[in-house]
Image (cartoon, rainbow, N blue to C red):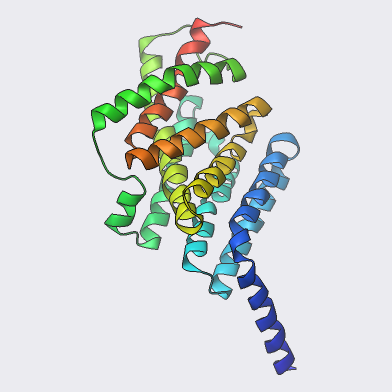
Length: 273
């Protein structure tokens, strides 16, 4: 019996290893299903699927010695369903509405930095993910400039309501601070940094950028807008290319932060429904 069990285990392990290159894409497909259920049906179903995927992924990593590059992809991608779990299950109702966004993204940043610490990323690996400053003024200007038309396009797609009765300096400064220092930092370090670089290391430049962009679009399914998914995918492709081209996250951070500030902090007051 033990011989049969060993042979069966060996056969399963061999099949897993033979198809391991498909795991990251399959994982993202599962995240897409969870996000769809989360956004359009029952939040509880989406949370349960995310929890199951995280448990299965870490069980797989502990039982089967995958290619190190594939394993890093899976662990980086696992931060996305964790992101969903934390944002859906923590008692956010205890926070005032104006503190909700920094509260949520502080948790995401904590997840990202915990992952970096746990994986013992070297300084060279962090630089490879864009943790370096190269010609910052040029990158910031480029990012801010591109953000103006993209922010307008995304606003015309989503048409979000203004958060206050009128545009005021303190409200704009608060929105800009949240978007640059919380949303942009958390999402760029996670997606353009950890996830994209791990996928690029495993599958090459374009595959890494495209797969990351699919995941990034899927994570925006909560807007319940198909045009928004297309916009986010294309924006992510451009952000991913910029990160690689400039070898830095500075430009993508400036672009992302300004795009979101225009989207929620400026245009809703200037262009009323």
